[in-house]
Image (cartoon, rainbow over all chains, first blue to last red; front, side):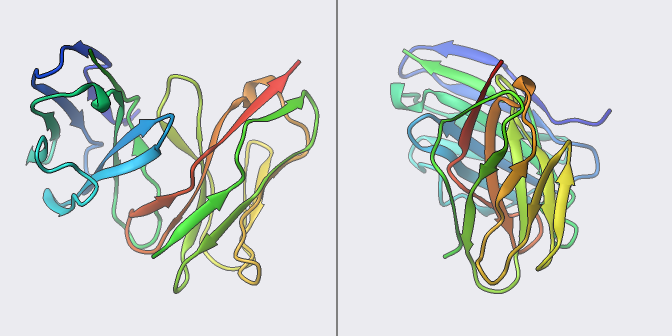
Length: 115
Length: 111
């Protein structure tokens, strides 16, 4: 049963520490998205990759966030240094990028708490 | 730019009640429309979709019809169950998988 895998599921860290979240997209999918979910802001798009190339990271705070796809099986989202306002659930999603199907498959999320 | 507006929650219903969650969109061209559902502690998953005007998407007793004249895609279910308690997101897509989401509507169904 193909699914998007995210690690860690939960992370508690102190302000100023580096945080790296990892995502394994579904094999064969060529689009990968990072979303952040908070009660206040809802779902926010942070970054979007197609064929491993970043197409849109306008929603990401550039000074502390970075997103990469070192290879087709791994996407990373890094925060350095982390701040309490970064506390949220971070979701990775992948899709086949075919036509206008629009179906994304989401991971279970990484819950980040920055103290 | 494109946008999706859905009714604010929470929506609280008794079991077996009729459900409607309103969704309207603003977009140029001909987007595809979606409803995603997020159960507690999980990621979003596709509930149903419609790719052109007058199409009806359906799944698990939920339905939504793509109404171009009113730019709407309201979600309905005739008889909700406690297990339907979740957050529901309306979304549109125009190219590939690039989705624009609404703010989400929390549904709580009481026994």
